[in-house]
Length: 95
Image (cartoon, rainbow, N blue to C red; front, side, top):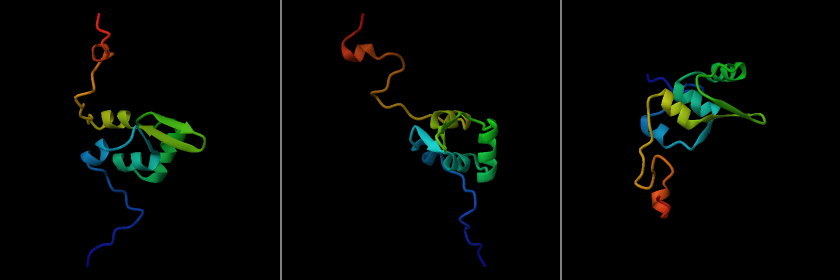
């Protein structure tokens, strides 16, 4: 007999899932990425002890994805148009 997947079961996210996330995510998604339960995650956020920066927007918590990726040792691949620095050369403003 196979165990059924409970809707309350905590499931982690793959590297591809994490790298596809938007700039900020809800606390439940961050909890899944860190494989911590909902109550634990919300408790840590309320106490200011969540392992990454948490933004409180009204009644909602949001986690900055870049901070989460850094904690997990992941980086988003840079596209050809992305440059570290000001990128002034791209706009014809080179000195």
